[in-house]
Amino acid sequence: MRIVLASASPRREELLRRIVADFDIVPSAIEEPRHGRATWRVLEAARLKALDVAGRASGIVIGADTIVVQRSLVLGKPASREAAAKMLRRLSGRTHSVLTGLCVVATERGDERTAVERTRVHFRPLSEREISSYLDCGEYADKAGAYAIQGRAARFVDRIRGDFTNVMGLPVSCLTLLLRDLGLDV
Image 1 (cartoon, rainbow, N blue to C red):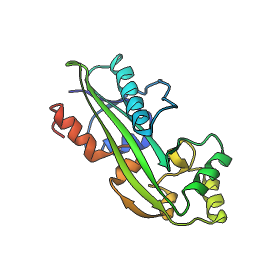
Image 2: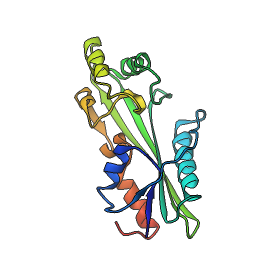
Image 3: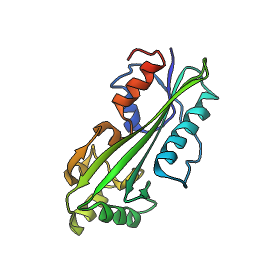
Image 4: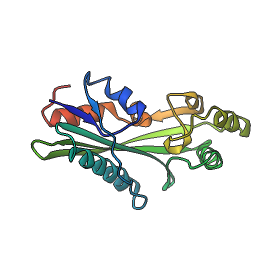
């Protein structure tokens, strides 16, 4: 059966390759919800992405969306270096949650499965010099919460509770269970 990833994210592609050898990439062009509770937002965004692509491609379509939440404030992708610095200062010395919404649609049966994965991440206190140096590398761009745990920001993390791949943008264990529930043996 054809598997389609409704995302242009290189991280999601890399993570999906860990469990599925062959799949197509068909990015979604939907606007992600900007209001509402965090759990609803990631689930709705994942569902809208999957359904958008399912309207153009057949098979098993996987939609995902990831956000960072710190004390009920959603930290999406930073619009600028200054916004990224503000986010990193907010995360410094604190715990935050990374939420990923998943929606898997079997287009031929009209069947879908959804889930939200939550991982708790704690940053050690960061100095202004560390924040500035990190921003200089540019890794923060296009990343929820302005950091990439699989990259240079790994040095900021002193504790994690939950799925590491979730923080990268695609919770592999949870996705495996959703695919199996739809009859796909991965």
